[in-house]
Structure formats: C-alpha cells, structure tokens
Amino acid sequence: MKNTVVAIPSSLPGGLEAALGAHFGHCDLYTLVEVVDGQVKNVKTLPNVPHQQGGCMAPVNHLAQNGVNILIAGGMGMRPLMGFNQVGINVLYGAGARTVGEAVNAFLSGTLQQFTSEFTCGGGNAH
Image (cartoon, rainbow, N blue to C red):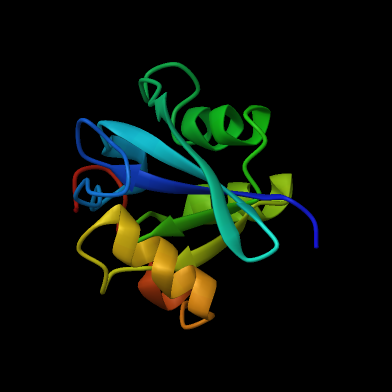
C-alpha cells in the first residue's frame, strides 16, 4: 500500500488532539498525517497561508505542494472543492469529527464520505 498524506484543518497547536478547523481555508494550521499500510506513521503541522495571496486557490496549491493526497474538511466553498479536484487531492467530509484524531480514525475505518457540492457553503466566513 502506498503512503498517503492526509491533511486536516486544525486549531492551534495542531496534532491529533487538536480541534478541527471548521473551514479549511480559514483554519489556524493543518495537521498532516502520514498513513502507511493503514497505520499512522508520522504527524506534523503545516502553517496555513493567507487567502489574499491567490484567493481560495492559495491553500489548495499550498497543500498540493506539500504532498497532500487527501483532505478531510467540514466546510469549504465550491471553488476550492473544484480546485482540489483539479490538483488531484481527494476531499472527504469530516464534519462529525470533533478532533483531528477522530477524523483520522474515521478515515482509517473507511467511514468518511466523499465531499460533494451538497456540503459546500458560500465560502468566505460562512463557517
């Protein structure tokens, strides 16, 4: 099985115990979890980037440049969702999880559903 890097929008300080950031583009930072053969191998944090530089696509490109394959998110607008699809990052809907660890466990157990347009918000500060 290949290595997968999962990004989860997080509140400070990040890590498995951190609360989920409600909206991917406005989170404090991302917790990046490397999964190998269905097991968590490494956990680190990645600072978010300001929306001003590149608008909604700035965080999308930032995650793609850092090797992310999967994003677990509770909220985002349609434009960034389309952007993630364009750069090959699979977005999963994780609104039921309260912490990064819960989101990762849901991912590992295969219970997260695909993030579709029905979950999108208006963007901006809607979440």
